[in-house]
Length: 443
Image (cartoon, rainbow, N blue to C red):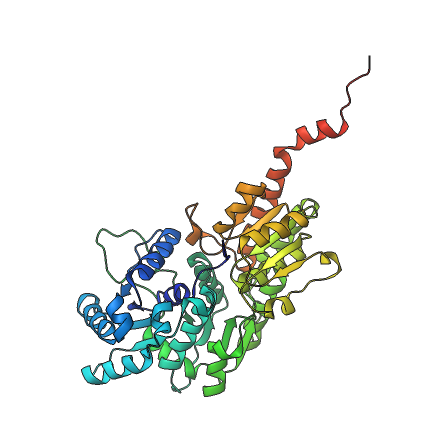
């Protein structure tokens, strides 16, 4: 690929581990891999991001990198004193066949460690950052969750959404009077407040003790409909501990947010309070305000599959026609998308690069793009305005503060999309009208 629409698996693994309290990440591979991923994540969140590396070189590549990994674990324990270490792999470690699960288990036994170390195989060529994210969350749950005593906290398993979205999700759960374990939780670890002194390991994240008790929860809500059962943390909890699983889309859009509220009402037996009914009503009002502008929208939507799925539904609800839609490799997204007769021109791309997206966007006369900032090439080269949403956002500040979930978040997203369409329309409106309708008099 010349310009892929996604990043590699270990990137997603780091994002998942950054949502665990006191966690430190060890990347088993070359120094360059960890540097690239650390910089990429730090530029999006505008936060310092520490990532360890086993620093594999030529010698380790030929004779094996176990010694490097062990030394790296020694250094991380000494310098950071973490509550958990996550070990993920890169292309190099996987190519030479490093058995990191065996190495980690041997290391813990030899040092008689109670410190949890979670190992996940995340080769860069094995899939996208979204794949790496879900695989790592699954490994966290498999390694730590036990058949604990039953309790009242429901499990909430989230995809790669913004810290602002997670804080909104917590607010909604508080309004519905739920106790919960949210995993992973980057709302504080990757969007921390300014403090006079720097801490190597930021406060916040999913408590490790709470992860261990996920097997005793009354239910799991997992915002994931495009992933396979083999990598679903919620599916593991259901199969292993009998925890009922509710797999639903990210609550972006009217239908998806209604589905989330319905699940909460089913689990609790309580109706939603009036404050949420009012927020839903304000979203309906926003949809009424903008519908007369959105019919002209022909969108290209790209990013993490769960986000793409939810955004496509949101566009359909508001009269915006999705023309080009792309998530990760695989066909599940295409099978699930709720395309109807108004979208008979929609092209669903699997694992493309932006050159192919550009070709399809031109063919479909796309006039708005929705996705992460790598889509800026659509603006630079084809003058298609971009609504930035998702990960990564590198050419603007505030990606970690973008709110999109719930009735309130959906209202904000809808306003941004509608205003982007209006700005593009009026930028050339007078010139186009002049060229189309004005004729000089013949003398």
